[in-house]
Image 1: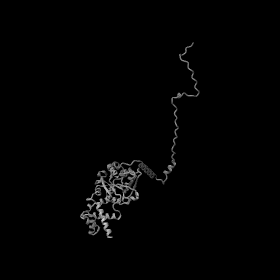
Image 2: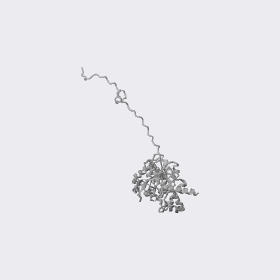
Image 3: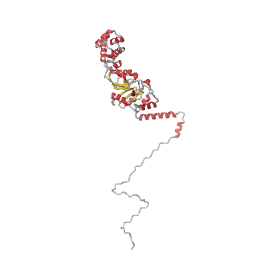
Image 4: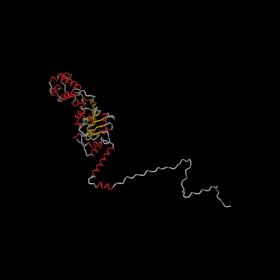
Length: 370
């Protein structure tokens, strides 16, 4: 009997079908594994082939200015980049210099261009303005847009007025990404708020050029639609005159106080500007009255008396009024007596109430004469 291995008997393996290949074992039932399904990938769409003949024909066309087309394309790219880029921080002097240099500019002293480069001063202006999301703001003398940018981040609509044609491209670039900024390239004294805002309320927030402060204040305070609030930065000496009390009152101070209540919010050193001016500045806030105490012809009479009284500040009020109004001294004496004003006082010692009483006394006397 032949020797056999000591193994149990096993059934014979069935033959493999013809043409089959060995592969992995099929998944066991209940094992949880399954075959993965991969979605077919979309076919990549190739861009259309360039029409080389058309390009060559365009380039060889004598009526085509390829340089102008390249410049226009570069300008468009620059505009798109400006719109998509965040506004620069112009309170940083390094950034400001870079922006000015990119436009080939330097500060123009003839326009009083001393650019604000102080973040604390910007914050003080904005805090005084108390801007709300639905506010309309008028900014005059916008310059490079250092204040414009911050106003636009807080208000619904900002109208920026700038006259200097050299600085206007800078202002347009720095505010390009702010859709609520409207730029008016015009002299601020030619801007009529009633045309810009209609009857809507607005706030005037500005860094005023020193040489035009008085005219600017008068223009907007006497406008058909005056601002509800003014926050302006002016020369420190001017700010002190605007907010002065009787005893040091000037014609400018009386004129502003006729329309509202001014107060100094903060004092600003010359170092807050680039380049630094020769004098310090101050921020003042003027809360305008709902309506001035006099209007129309009565208001005109008030300011006629004030101009006459302050024309000769060192003279006593009765002499100043009689000389500059060309009114008989006894007539002026009657006005002063009715108003309860000592004729020996000088114009700077009179309060706003004194001037109002004097105006009403003069108006009543004129009515009695007629």
